[in-house]
Length: 219
Image (cartoon, rainbow, N blue to C red; front, top):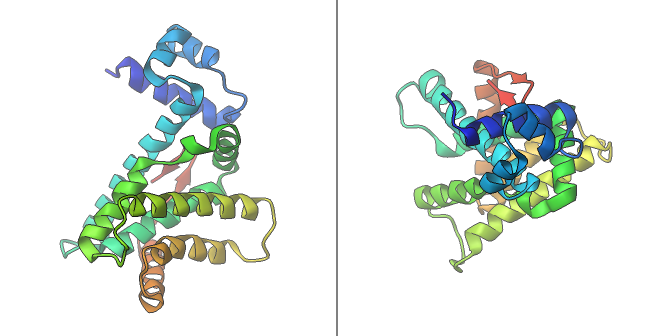
């Protein structure tokens, strides 16, 4: 049986997807959960922070689902290529935004209200994993990885919003290539290796079908 916090996140996910961030209110979430509004603020402090938790939950589940499927269906017991696996995760995450207008609406409206709450700490963790595995060419100032992660998230959001607004002439495929490569550029990976990562990640998605579904789902 779900606890109250999990139930709030589930209901909020449904309403944020169907109505957008702006038109979803804590009173409505509380009513659907059959609880009081102060209980939501007790757990999450604010609607913006609740939206951040919704995004964070998706990111963690998305990463685990993609990594597990690649382990079983692509790498098949061989040592996994973390860079390729990450590229697949990123491409699918960005596809969700570019292909589902409800998701894009939610992300844009949330960013418009409180941009800093769109940043996910799980991205910092991802960069730390890559640093441990590949010894990234960083200057080693204390906050550099966090700076890189924030730069990647902010840049990706800006590019996706601009693409959705019709500001680019590129195809969706070209936009996704750029968005995926951006993370590795910021990690200071060599250009030739980035090209290899992008090419292999696209081969993976040709071999293993993932589907974009309503309610922030990539399965």
